[in-house]
Length: 402
Picture 1 (cartoon, helix red, strand yellow):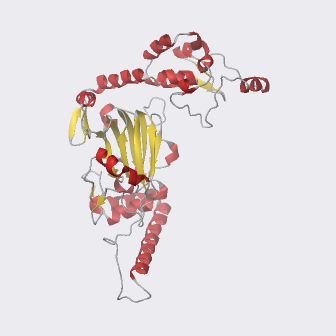
Picture 2 (picture 1 turned 30 degrees about the horizontal axis):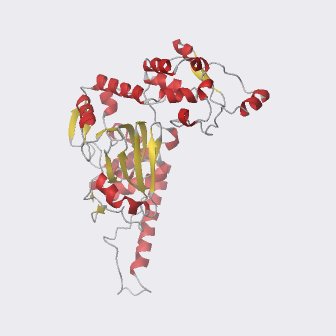
Picture 3 (picture 1 turned 30 degrees about the vertical axis):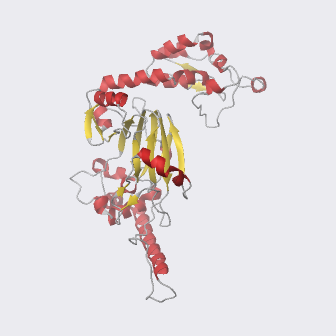
């Protein structure tokens, strides 16, 4: 789509080009010293976030009439603006919402996005998606979302959604979404078609979610909420930190179990967990992206019906962790195709071809970490050189994956 958006410091904007120019906000003026002084004294203005973030609901918490800043839309009744918004597709609706704060609120109304979700079901209703142990057509899962009253609802979590939906990933204008540049290069990309599963479409009703786990293969992850909201509680991993309260790990750390559903865990252990060292918690809402560092325990629960996309990746800072995991715990490596017999050897070979210096640095770091852990262990189990005295902690695994 042609055209572009011009936005000044106060998020006044106008959309230029193609047939949507009639929807643009008028009244745009470059900020001169004179207009700046006048506008800064205008009590109807709301200070904006330095990053340009416009949180949901600002039309309702504002002390002034922010609709007056919506250009020609300011002269239209609210009901008519809503009707106009109903005719817009998601991309145009998002662009309209980015022009000013009042239109942001109009473009985020529940009913608008509910109809868009229904159109998603209409388009992909017969496409099967993985929902935990079952694979259902999307329309079947949508019916389940609307009608279920399960304590722990089934969670749609599909790693082939890009192929099934015919989506394009990248920053090109015709693509559907792109990977945030702030997370850097994904070093699993050197494996090309042989890389493990990396991206998932996540859909679930209220109360659905994921119990405590670490992401596979010591990867990091980002999770972008498209619709709804999610509660997260997370804990870093360190030798001195036990698993989260109510979580039990096997001796080789290959199995993580909890005798409780997410709801029971929240009722029984949440208060204790919030007081635990390193605990991080928060709510991620639509349009927000959350980063999960390599090796962190995390539990996620949907506070309402939600749609999200998540990607797992290996950043440069945690390459040594991923290599150590794949080398030392081969039976726990997951997501690779049956044609890959030795994921660690393949990864090392491909890194050697494309990033030899980085590979050497990471292998050296692995050895330093291994030597450091051994020294720590020897200090713990030996008292004043007396090898006859010692003590241990569980299975003796002193792994620390940051």
